Length: 113
Image: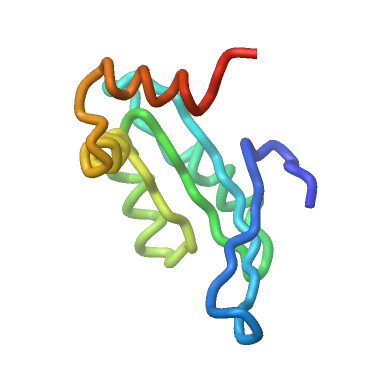
């Protein structure tokens, strides 16, 4: 599956061994400052690229504008939203709760090439 303007694509396996199914997903990442929300234009772009039996993941270092979020939910679009606070919570639960610990983890797992 080609990217077609998406930041990443992948497959998610649901179920166990012989009973598992694989579902395609498209991921869009927005690295924005916290005062610059993801708006309807950006979420519509992701949604318009989703195919049948596919879901989307929107990751942002900011937040999603209330109108964009409302449209995703009211229209029942299969989009998972991960915002800045979610990223902070994930890192904190994994005991990466300081700038130094996050920086060390990033350098260990994603070395500069």
